[in-house]
Length: 316
Image 1 (cartoon, rainbow, N blue to C red):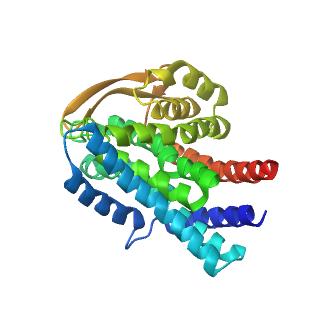
Image 2 (cartoon, rainbow, N blue to C red):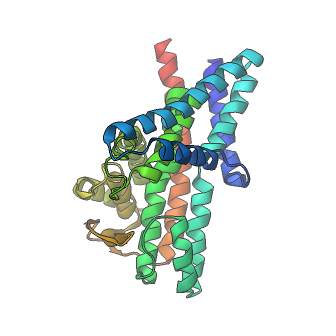
């Protein structure tokens, strides 16, 4: 039980560090990984799925292996639970991004509340890759709510799930996969084949966290029945197998309508409407989405830690 308790204490401390401090301001490990992955991409890029799979293996496998080495080194140097708990806390703080997500979303919300559409458009790329110039205030608010929902799964819950399953290697590996998908997993002409492996691996790795996020949004939201109804009716219509359940459950929980036409890098997409009976997103819904995201993150910590303790106990 010592190792499981050290994980529980470390994960809780790491999430608390994120809540109090946000992401590290200097020498962020995820940013360092992104720079390294970019160099590997430049060395390996070919318009071919095989080369993209190699890029994914080198980068995601390297991050996971680093977690394995670090965990073993800490157990060797500090055989007690303290060292492992400290390493878990540091890894959790590094990979979880709930507070930064809330800060970025709130910054856009404050700009919209002031009526400063120029500032809101300038800040939106901090959250998502949409083209902001053609968006009015309500469309920006909708984009922010959708981004908060999706990133609650990607930046918080998914990491906690894989941390509970595989400890520090799981935390680092999941964040590496998620970062690679953001870097090369989109369908631009240059990356359509090269980024295929990263995108598919992210779909697989994100599956359990997305479903847990959707369940917790049902439990933590203002309208549980509406969240379940939107999830069941609309999630499968979304082009992403993981964003669909998360965004649909958030839409139902908040009583708003998400989805519709959007633009990425000059490419227009017509996505299905989620929770079509809901009202259009308003600026005030940004704050509601952020609060829901925080509740989901805290519940996810409890659920994943409990799951690890119960699962390991039964295994023994």
